[in-house]
Length: 327
Ligand code: SAM
Ligand code: SF4
Image (cartoon, rainbow, N blue to C red):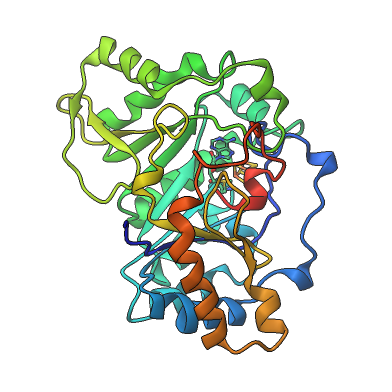
């Protein structure tokens, strides 16, 4: 059985962007009330008394947009300082990074993943659902600041959507030629009752890879620690290209992670609702952390049977959006 030692922690479900593939039905979203968010103290209690004793050592902070949490730097610092933490990373849209990159780095964050789906300000604004002043420039400044501060590796996550940013595959891949950046193409998933998905099919990684290969050639890059990504390189480039193909290739057998939502639900699988437990409620109900740990240990035992392949028959779309689950 695969060792499950990685927890993806959503800190907030709100976001300052409205990416079409992530928060498509914004009007219908009801956000978690602030008193229902897991507090920093509750999160640290769960990490120290439940997850770390069960062998979890790798943590990713995500959301929604995690930089919207006022206490983000303290959360980073406390998790980075836990002696058992082997790896701490964060996924962000970079809009607030120019201001926050340095303090996050000093607090102990060394790895960062940034979502960037377009190099064209108009397309970017269209994807993030922005109708006011363009947000591309500030986002790009945030990425450059993260690079300058020293985040390494700096990974850029790209979701390619047919007819929207498909024509930018080569431009985005080209970023890896002169910079030690890692561009990762993530297949678009049917999450959040997404019209965009039902109208137009997603593009498989193999197609994206072929396009890049035809332009520059591609070689396999032997790099470990990239989870489900298949890693390649344009010959002689400084960075790498990753392909995360959760739609075209099922990698449930290699799954090493669980997800904790911003309101404290522990979820064993991204695409299957089965088995969730509300750990925040358990803490607030005064349940002893050794009992909570036992519940999580039981869930870990059945986790291999809760996966994408075994999800409810006939369920093709998931109502909870990625921003609610924690991407
Ligand atoms: N706001 C942060 C950001 O955008 O990086 C963190 C949260 S976001 C939900 C985490 C990741 O999920 C992003 O890289 C985003 O591209 C990805 N994502 C969201 N919806 C998706 C979907 N339907 N299919 C594939 N990836 C998706
Ligand atoms: Fe916000 Fe990230 Fe979702 Fe975009 S992908 S709407 S930035 S949570």
